[in-house]
Length: 309
Image (cartoon, rainbow, N blue to C red; front, side, top):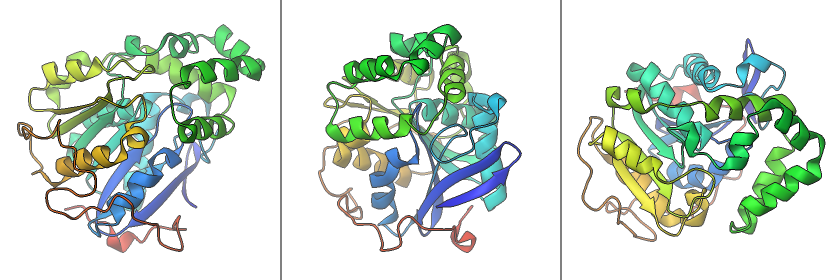
């Protein structure tokens, strides 16, 4: 377990691998653990040092600073994290709410963002599931939080089609949040609308969406591709809100194809959205069933291995 101290309290993160940095951001009522398998696979290539952060109010990060549970605050959290660890520039990838934060970070700090990837991320808050939008109203959020049986029932309905692994992960992570972060983060997210800002993206962008997603509408993929013609978009036909779990091999293939492309805005490879190799990229250098090293998670970062070039 690794952490840094910020003005808003402890920021917890996990890290693994050697090489150029990659920053991964989780979604609402999740934690860094949603990225665990992806981290192991990316790190197995010996080209990347992968960092997965817990947002304030979630996972093992601080939960006391009320004003920190908003996307703009999370953008600054990522900025503080990079400054503290001496990471000058990095790809920033995010799932769900974390994808919205990654996009806002790329728009706010383009000089610090090598590439940006959105995974099941709402570009427009109105694309959220009705329950998530309602949870952004204080009175409803308080009701849901006061009566866990109500919250658990709704979650069971929302996640009925998801794997046992996803349901267990959400059940665990929701216990590690609190009323304020639960409410304030989704309240801010439901008001989000970044459509007018998309055209100012200065770095390569990738959108990965599950065609069967019932949490965030996959129509966000169309928003991204229309506003940013150079963006790569992969629609995962068998996936719901967690494509990294539903179709892990294809998910990692798409992610790796994006990572190895030049750090400039280019039109997508014609095969990026249809690539289905189950074990390797075209370069044959990704192992999707890699095991973590014995000391996983790493207890502290080795800053000497962070590359900002």
